[in-house]
Length: 485
Image (cartoon, rainbow, N blue to C red; front, side, top):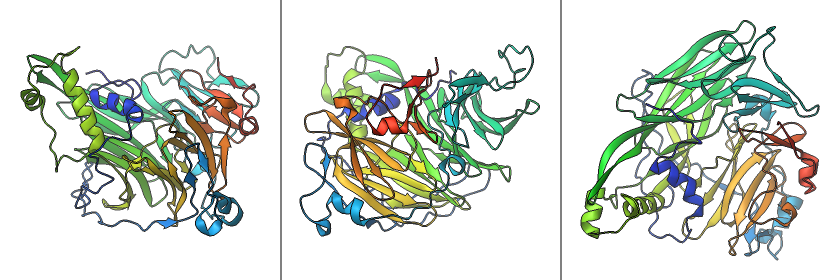
């Protein structure tokens, strides 16, 4: 069994996720949000805690804040006054009180699998076979090993993490997720003496053909990561057959680093879990599934029996296209809030939620998420405070495609009617909306703030992270981009 990183995995489902944003928003027959589910689910912890109690089938009331409108040329304010919800009213009249402690120490929400902001916000840790530290101000990089004459090529080096899927630093210890033939385990390393310990091990199902592991997420004294499990079967495509690898479920692992306990939540009918952020008592995640109750998915045999003879460039091409469209139109993405001390959850919204994998989605104890109508493209940007339960709609517009939460701002891109993109950021404290001119580029971002330090934004490429001062970014000046060679 070959274990590959999440970014390299290419089953038909992960390929579908990669091309999802390019599909037309005019696809019909979709089910919005969790409307196809009559009840929320009861979740049992696979770590031996027993059956979970039924989840509360409730939706937290959403309080609308100030709203904006899309005019077709980007996010702009209405012509009306503040009572009509103009964007001007957000910056002039609205101020939000969010429980945003230092986001570097409370919620690392580790951006990308191999890059993480240091707890003091002065630099970054990055992993490339060995764990290294980079000081953004001085431009100095160093392997985190002080042993004289060390070659940094095997486990005798304290910084060596070469077999890891994802690496992160928390409270002086180094953590790594490692996959072998039969299990996925979280390993800790104490840099003081290079002592290594397996914190928790998750056995993979016997029929697993492959698995992918998410990046590590640090929330207060907890670590979270997910394991997507795949199985391989032979499928008949008309007159030919081929091997098909499908996701069979997702395991979410939660580790309490203070108490030393862990639990596993298993989601058998799940396509993907996206962790958004957590606090001491709860955590938020997006559950991605497919509703097959109202219109079942045809098997390959059933599909080709209906279609008859079909010319294809490769075995199963037309069925793959049918299945991809079915996955999109029947896809459900629920925003769930889990109580850490129980096995129950509540839905924070019944709308369809966008799962963003660009960067951080949690700032202190505040999460950001976007809901979008799959048919019309109407999009709302929401903020939710995990500590207080405050729930505010920060902006209403259209066709928000991706977002991340950095420097106290929701940074997003929006697809225009022309097919080009515009780029914006919204201050989470005041609601003020600003456009990123992007030096005129409308089909790509000149610089993508995937995570931040105190003074810099970082594009967290796993190969070579790049840096830009926040002041230069806001000034639309990209001349001083620097990176690790």
